[in-house]
Image (cartoon, helix red, strand yellow):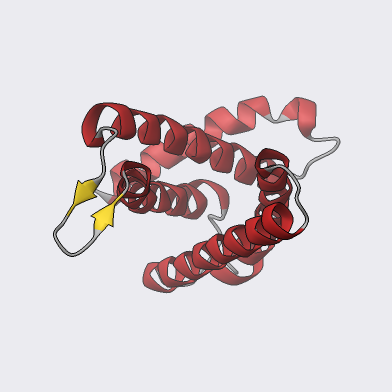
Length: 162
């Protein structure tokens, strides 16, 4: 199984590296790989969310007896672990391949960084939208820039450090 994962990662890395030359003047290869994998994982998340929300979960609240879950939150709960896993494996096997930490340590650290990003998103949106009265979409875009920068530094120097 590990050989299959390594082969797939090598194919993905080779494809990304084919696209890299026009950008090498401005972006280091590691950062380009990170941006490409992260962007691909975001698009995967959006597509998965759309499909699950519209064709699996539906548009109605789910009453579990002790709590009512809105469909958009239930869909988030389903997609989050899937895209967390795909993001971790892309980062581990495609982007940050030279780390010598054990995979379990990397996974724990990756989850920690993702949870910090969730907190940054939550509190950032509260601050910008509710207190500063900035529209939600530009607020989310600004916060995404912050979390992407935080994630890159955290993943490079903490989660997948050499």
